[in-house]
Image (cartoon, rainbow, N blue to C red; front, side, top):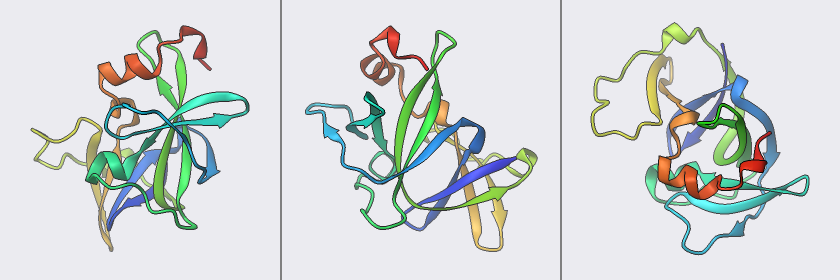
Length: 154
């Protein structure tokens, strides 16, 4: 299975590459005052607004650093209606892919109380890599706020 690897601080995370539509350079987002925690705003993707979630902000409470390796990862986010919506994720150190069998990832043993988007982990020579469950990044309330327009499916 192919994964895109990125970092939040010193920790490494991966996303399933099958969920990724495109990787974009970092760009400023249109702020959404009063938006839920982790929601930076919206970006313009070919004339359509796409909600932007900052993974560093969501995970550790600080925005992603604006460095050369910071990217926006455009994913296909599954909706309850069975259609996909575009969701943009801001992440740091987006510079490599990793090929690993899904079976290499095992539960952490401390799932209770952790955010639902934090999946199983795999080990390598550098330490642990955690799988981000993109479909669990948004709570039902945030999904309802970001995807109100039923015509925004891709």
